[in-house]
Image (tube, helix red, strand yellow):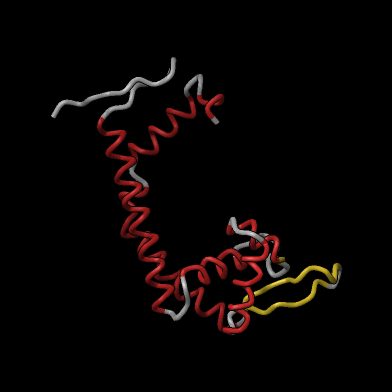
Length: 159
C-alpha cells in the first residue's frame, strides 16, 4: 500500500496514511469507551446524563460547594437544563441540594452516600475499560504527531 500525504500550511509536515489511521483508531477507541460508560450508567440504574452530572459534581474543584452554574458550565448546558437534571438526581437520592449560606440565591449540590456508591462503581468499571483500550487511546505515534504539531512554527497561530 502506498502512503498518500496531504500538504498542510507552510512549515507543517505533510499528513500520511498512518496519521489518519492513528486518529481514526483513537476516535473509534474513544467512542467504544463512551458507549461502555453509557452502558455502565444504565447497569447501575441511572442515565448517562445523570452519570455525567455525578462525575461533574464530584470532580469539580470546589466540591462539595458546587453550584448549579458550575454544573451547567462543566456539562456545557444551560442553567435551566442543569437545574432540572439536578432536581431529577435529588429526587432519585443521588444528590443533595442546599442553599449557599453565603448567597441565598445560589443552590449548592453534593453527592449523597447512594450517589457516591453509584459513581464509585461506574468509575471503577470505566477504569478497567480504559486499561483495555490503552493501546488505542495512548498510541505512541499519535502522541508523537501531536507533539510535533505543537512544536511546528505555525502551530501557535492555529490554536
